[in-house]
Image 1: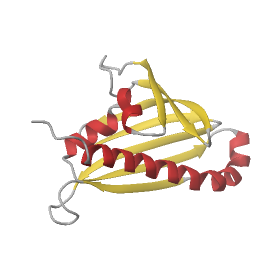
Image 2: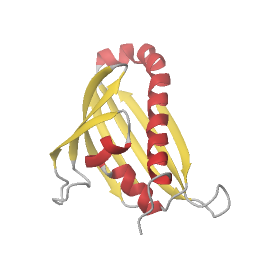
Image 3: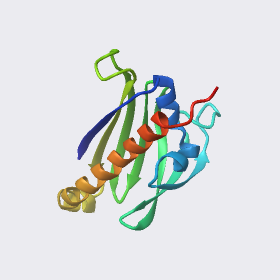
Image 4: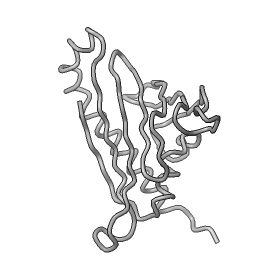
Length: 161
């Protein structure tokens, strides 16, 4: 399953990337995230970067679910990729912050989510087409809400003086 979602955010590229990649405080920005626990630092020892791992607990379908994610690409302030394996499926979520030409959609940037999944176990390969159809709409709705939460956080936060 492949899915792309996108929204325009009226904020500088660095601010958008920082908000989208601040995994430690994600629960303060994204309403569906209940908590994040880091399990490994980045390969270079920094809290966030390639090799960092964390468990993200979300409420989906009225129940909490926890997935362990790994940062597999980290290119501030442009993009990062998270990878996870869940229920026999490999997921890659690429987040990009692309500066827009002034005036095209106002000032600011486009925040893109590209989600790719691939079944890696026999049961996931068999059940994938059926479950994929059932889950795609719910997953799209959840990711659209994540984008809306980040947009709202950046465009409506109090200005600092």
